[in-house]
Image 1 (tube, rainbow, N blue to C red):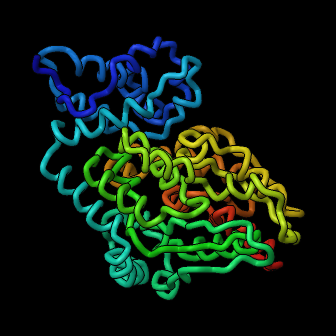
Image 2 (cartoon, rainbow, N blue to C red; image 1 turned 120 degrees about the horizontal axis):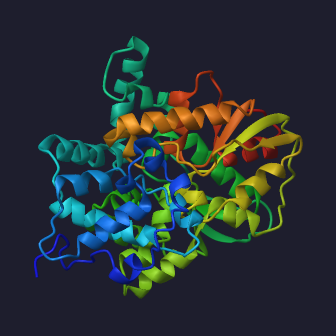
Length: 406
């Protein structure tokens, strides 16, 4: 029987049938908010996935368009009263679209180019001087507004492979450095290491692998995601915990057991992965927090808040900093439009979401914004109408421990 889906991990019919089409997902879905079409909502896409199982169906241009418009933010998973596992469904549908979807040659070349650059830290570092020159000369190049301002020294700085614990050692942990994170936000990784060491952890920061496969996994480039997952498992096994300070990376690494289903080694590895906020919140703080008198708006990164269900821990850590006032923006559940590579392949929709998110954060009157994902920080900064600094929560906590001000 010929259908749109091939036999390699199609969206599961049992999970498709869990959706009762109640519509609770609609107000939380960013693509539905932008496009206002039923097929651009979670329940609409689930209908398309069911159609894909019917005889004679195909991954048409229309189906490709609607599935591509999904940001994969998983806000619908948080909102769904029926417990529909949309995250599992979209992650099985996307590789099918990659193999059989009706995309133009230009679209495919753009995607290939993104993965060839952004998941390779060495190539990114080589591009940083050109980005700095472009920003200085204000040259009109595609996606220029999304290029972060990275000091050359920061981009080429390396973390020590081992940082000893301060005081009595709580355990040995590995920090996943990330690909975009280590080049564009190396200062965040350095702050994270200092905080973890101050709290009693011996921190290891292996330089390989180059990437955990998150961008590939969440976009449907499944074979490369699996290969990078296996390399990550091999590099980071043997530690008490594998700690992540990037929402998208943590979400992907916790899914290795599902991605490599049947692989007990992958399941054991995923069970050890913790977001840095989770790890710190699980243990009594040791290092003294010094006052940081600031009004800070907290931004929920989707792959932290929705995919990993980590919402209370970052807020608790920030509220634990004396004199720091934490502010909550409206529309916390709606994606900022970054969503992995979404703002590169769907720029108009991403821009609308970016403007909305930036306006909500600015409306709090905050002096600074806290965001635990590099893509979110880049996206929000691009659409703020007034300059508001954006910090990772670990950067703020690091300043508090050191008694300095960002």
